[in-house]
Amino acid sequence: MSPNGSGDQAGWRLAVDQVRCISSGFCVGTAPNHFAMDVVSAPLADVVAPSDKVIEAAEFCPVEAISVFDVQTGTQLAPKR
Image 1 (cartoon, helix red, strand yellow):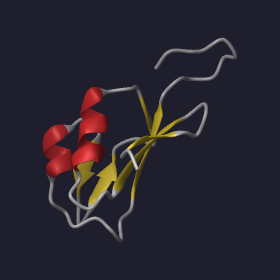
Image 2: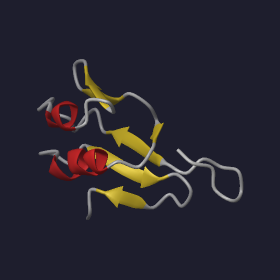
Image 3: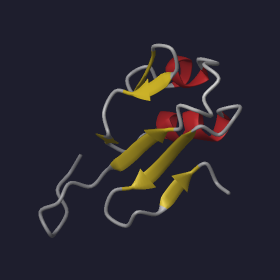
Image 4: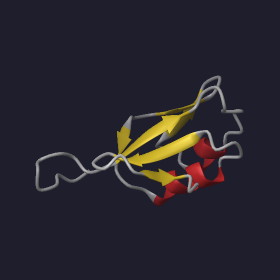
């Protein structure tokens, strides 16, 4: 992640709705550096550097359990609603 002009870290916040997650494993298969599977999926870090794989995991989660937010603005980036 790179610092922005205000000294904050630019990145994305990951969240997994553990009630909604059905443990399909798509996220782990798509972005293994960002998600792990225990009983349900969990992000390996709360904030990550932007990655197309993270967006893909969120967009194609069969139950839309993964959300990706811009850390600086709070804008939800995925899944698109």
